[in-house]
Amino acid sequence: MTAQLDAISQMANNQPDSALTLLNKLEPQKADWSKGDRMYYELIKLKTENKLFVTFTTDTIINQVVDYFKDHGTANERMLAYYLQGRVYADMGEAPQALQAYYDAIESADTTSVDCDYQVLIPVYGQMSILFHQQNLPHDEIWALQHYLNYTRRIDGEKEYLKERRHMISPYYTLGKKDTVLQIIDDTYKVLKQLGETQEATDALVTSIYIYIEGGQIEKARKTIEIYEKESGYFDKNGNIANGHEHYYITKGFYHLATNNADSAEYYFRKAMKYGYASDAYKGLLAVYQKRNNIDSVLHYSILNEKALDSLHNHMEIDAIQQMSALYNYSRNQKIAEQEKDNAQKTMAFLNRIILVTIFLFFAIIGVCWLYRKNKKEKLIKIAELENALKNAKDQRTLVQEELRKLKAKDYISIIAEKEKQEAELTKQIEQLQAENNQYKNNADHHQKDDLNSFLNCDMARLFVRKANGQTERLIPNEAEWRLLMSRFAKYMPHTFQFFSGNKPLSQLESRICLLLILGIPEKIIAIMTDSAPSTVSNAKSRANEKLFGKKQAHSLKNSLIHTIECT
Image (cartoon, rainbow, N blue to C red; front, top):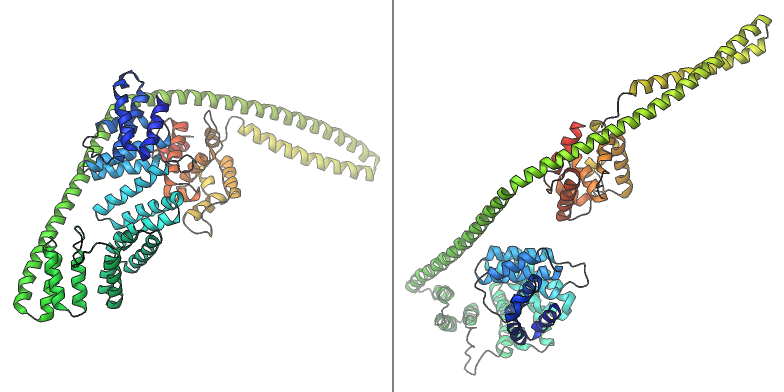
């Protein structure tokens, strides 16, 4: 069944009608399938319906599909499920949920894999750009389009990239970057002309005409008008433009106004008014009568223009309020869902915490006792060795002293000097052995403790803090600096160092992040110093916290580390 569904999925890319027919034939058999096959069937069916531009009205099925593929299937299947969830929410007018689904689709994509399905990833960014455009967020729209265009260039080639680049015109125009807009229009026009798509090539020229008029570049505007009216194919023999493109009359009116042809300008403004472009038409007619110095008409069209602008402004305010309301409701529902989930898990989490802490304390006590006994045994052996050496040295010195006494009685000066030298050396050796023996005896009943202050004040710790504060040439440490920092940590913090290497030893990245947290370095700087993405750092913190303290959380790792060190 999976193989059949795979084949239908491939068919849906180019023949969605045929694919949907086959899916409908298979639907009566669903009850006998496994859950995995049923969910895969629904995923392929939603994909096919999306290809056929079906308007989705309910999120029940797609939410079941997403819940299943969160924990099953491939990265491509998860990405497709989240993408289709975004399409469903977009059709239902739920822009915040749609954007969240698209972000989840992006996070699910494995762009490092040769099997990454860019035919899904590309429209994810395309749909995000549409939502950002609808919400008047040009910077976000440009961000989404840049990813859309980069992947388009990678998969479909340079010509398709230049062709699709025309979508950048709107957000850059909104931001007032008109030189960039003109460059995009020029590039797009040339590419589409080369591809033989003349009509599509001229579509963006209306925007460049208006920009030229605003900038006083009348000759460029005239030439562009000639190209547009000749090549677009939108005009009949009487000069009337095709349905859906009537806003061009507004642009033509402002061109005639700029060339001091007020009568023609008035003609086009009034013509545009017939097709519903009242606000722009009133603005044009107001400019016409200002040029003619007709005070009564100026007053009349000023009032009409103001009313049209008020109506447009009110409509925009209503849209903004609806968007804010949707965002508020979405955030509120998300918060309620998270609170309910947290409350449902609190009791079990509390019991698990007690069990984990008990187990941890049990093994920690066993480990401490074993280390204490081992350390004490080694010191007792060393003390015995030192005491034996000390006894031998004392016996030897007694013999030498006896010899010296006898030699002095016979007045053998040279022999006496030699023996005195030997005695001095032995005396020095005895003093050293005695001192070392006393030291081991004093430390025999004490185990070495972590010294956090010494670690924080050591040379390598101070170097890493300076790096984090931007006080060094390089922010990212090299491998030698990492090794030296770990060496100092092992020296001054032996028990914590051994703790990191326990039953579930930390990875290199997890150990480094723990060290930087102990040094008090912020998480955003940690991401740079470890050359990792913020999400990677957060995941590593969560794994380290689970290994060391049994907590599947990232934010509590630092407090747990500091608490453990203080209790050592």
